[in-house]
Length: 174
Image (cartoon, rainbow, N blue to C red; front, top):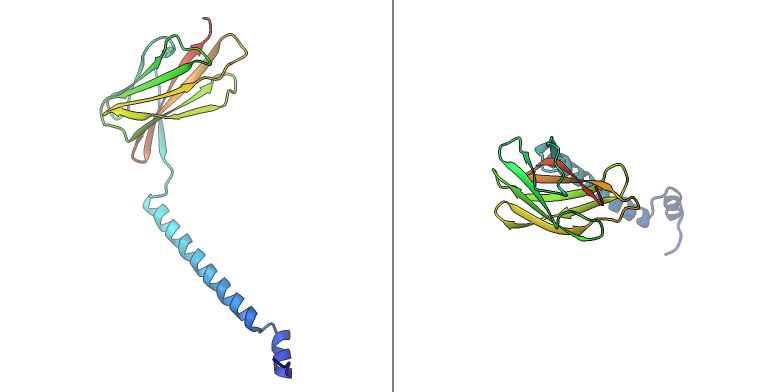
């Protein structure tokens, strides 16, 4: 295509066919992004993307590493934690069994953490084995100290709400 004075003036002004195409594409991408942002805001307003709310339930002192521990749930019913084998020991397979009475939950997970020493977070999504029973297996990390206190934060999910109970237990010699 020969360069005419009009063509050169258009190029200098930035009015080339490639520039017009890029501007149209950019406008379409912006419109699509704006539409998705609008949809996300509507879902957030409707509660579909709202973060889960968590209620923490106080629990009576109980060493779950020695026996079954229970806690009353705020909506009625109770949660029971069984750890096996007892006594609990580090670097040995650990089986968790959570029983929930009252309203059947949608799911249960346990988050095991060291108390007083950062041992990382050991998250176990438990499998439903009966209507109100959830089970799973894990191992505890080995601690350099002889005795270690652990916390099992049991999180019971009811729709978008979570009820959390923190049970404590020890490993190593008493």
